[in-house]
Length: 368
Image (cartoon, rainbow, N blue to C red; front, side, top):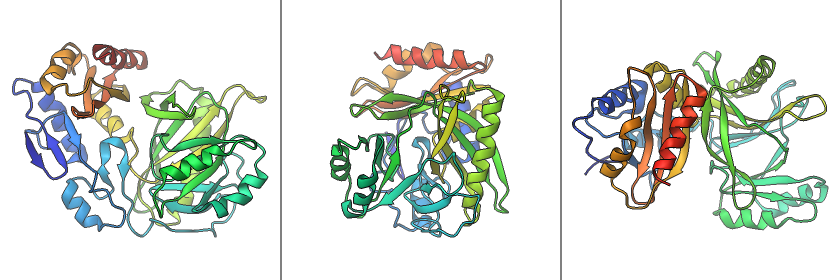
């Protein structure tokens, strides 16, 4: 085993040309991974991810571009000029940005009825007015991306979730209070803002969710493409561009993701609400780029579990039959593998959504 920067790498299978091919593609799209490195990578970002550190130092440590420290898991840094900025002078029809912190942007509604209203607060005293007005079920969550782990329900007759949320926080962190909207789908729109401010919508993926012990949906991964009517896709793209125009006014450029909740059972047939804007490289961005380079048409990434202390050789043996096959443009590999904790991120690619899901399910069955 060798160590390079914040990457702990395991030696690759020397006979695996497929592994070398995929690594080469990942290297081309800017992940800074050498061809001689392995596909199974353990990211040690603890002690490295620090919003107060200098960007150049983090870039040197991580080997990634300046917007990403742990690009595979979607955790990334913003340039300092946008981090922890409060801006409230954006004119209608754009929503008012309450605060940008820990790579998330939160909104209050002005004229747009498709933005989920939210409040950014630091202390219980600031939250009290919200609780007094609370008439519907809501969510309290930490500002930093946590895949639903630090999110809790609160309601007019039960605010215990607030105390649980505060217990998850360290001094100086902030959290968000947001109305809860029942929904069936959670699409995510990924866009890119060029240096001259041009907004380019890239793709819409569907977030794969499962319920946590608190009942809050937990983000487990993403699947592309989405099965949505053209009308709804068009709405999501146009509305996301409107939202992202607000970010352009702050000078941000780079990748950006807008997370939505979508209900297909309302009185009008469906409704959508934007619940988060992540001004950073989000989880599905690199799989989408890799999919294009691999010549596939569908991808799926999913957080999964391995038996603890399983070895890389054992993993390779189990997944060998469904590893990437360039002739059919389908197969699986891993964006992350940690033999100590038993965590992995499965990446599946094929030419059909249903086939991609089958491949990912097959991997999970191998280790169940």
